[in-house]
Image: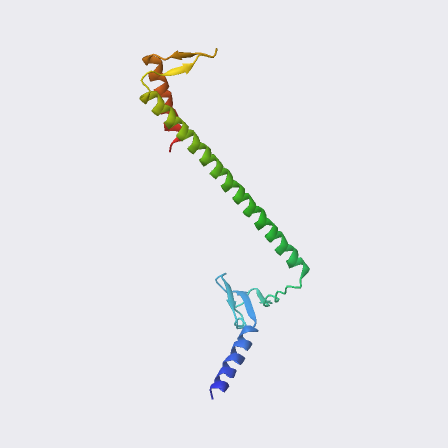
Length: 149
């Protein structure tokens, strides 16, 4: 009994899937879509719509294979571009981190060294007074603010 009911339902669904659709304009000027032909005298412009299911896709179709290959190629290119952009961001972040560490080291040196000496360019050294030292401290603090985020 259950097989008969299932077979009957499949038959009904199959018939309904292959049904005809009618398009017509009623007396009020509204477009109507129905599975029944329009009533006599009600249709000003009647036409049958030929609605067919889409053809099944197959993997043997060369045109769809070419489109699939284009999509795969585009995907590979986008993935490579994303990896390169990520590597560039990581490189830039590492560079900023190194500059931050260097600026922090300079600030520590300027603050902790009581008698700061710097090379004079002629092979000797010169002691730095407090005004120059404060300038170097301010410069190091600016670098820390710029590089350490």
